[in-house]
Amino acid sequence: MLSKLVTEFGELPASQKALLVAAGIGSVALLSAGGYLVKRRIDNTPPKQWRKAGELTELYVYPIKSCAPIVLQQVDCADLGPQRNLLRDRTFMVTNTEGKFVTARMKPKMVLVQPRFDERFETMYLTAPGMSELRLDVRPLLASTANESTRSTVWGEAVPTVDCGNEAARWFSRYLLDKEDGYRLRFYPLKYTSRRKHGSDTGSLQDETSYMLFNEASVTDLNSRLENKVTVLQFRPNFVVRGPEAYGEDRWRWVRIGDVVFRYEMPCLRCVFTTIDPASGVAHPDKEPLRTLKQYRQMPSYGESPALGIHLGLRRAGEVKVGDPVYFA
Image 1 (cartoon, rainbow, N blue to C red):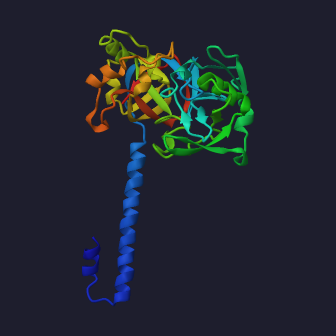
Image 2: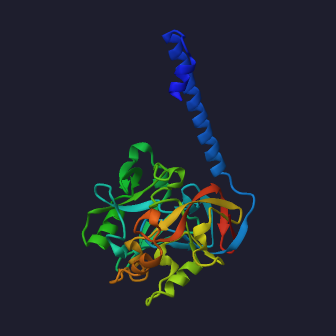
Image 3: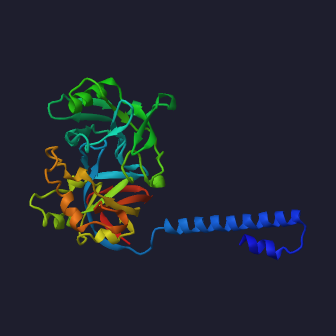
């Protein structure tokens, strides 16, 4: 393109050639940028035609990364993930003293930490085997200023967090390390993502995106291949759908639950976390169901990690509740 512009300008003075070439390059850049924006807008425009897949049967929110979920009947869907007032998906996480995140991959009994919230969804209470109950007021954390924040890391990405104090730190250190210190509990205070892994769909402290959907029939098919059966909780979804054929969700590019619209982002690639029994906090000695999944659910373009479930990004906010119809396109 550049050589063509120079040739067509013929014998013009060098200074005029330079100006015209610069103008040409600028036009090409504008056209490219315009084309990108148009394509992005088209890619993010929900379809007009939908097909019914089934209905929403289960809703889960995980306030603390790697800990047990709270079962809900309805949630508000925001950019960072499902929420009810100050109960929000994966806005808390355990870190070491340097701020690096800690998960159940390292400390499997984290899955036995059970959170609950008061009826106004403002105060969180935590229980775990052998531990007294811990009470944590969320609103003061949410109101923290930039001067009170500290940096933590999730998969190598720095994120702004607020430390939840020494009492919470001692509670998690005692439970996970049998020590008085070593771990901290930190909170993500922003209403938008500060991460760039999947743009605005990355969420707060999630591994991939703000939402994960799971098909009931897919785990039923998996269980037909397993000696020791698993439940959907082994895969930590937000949404569980009943109705589609097993693995039908692989082909969805858009999802609508009631009036709330999501766009497919990527398959959910499975790791050793799936081998941890959510009821006992013990990892399976033969690495099941991960071992079986690798036999038939690997996707060549995603390497050796098998896929089960799909990651979603929010495109139209709103409220969803158990029993809502689920559509796909």
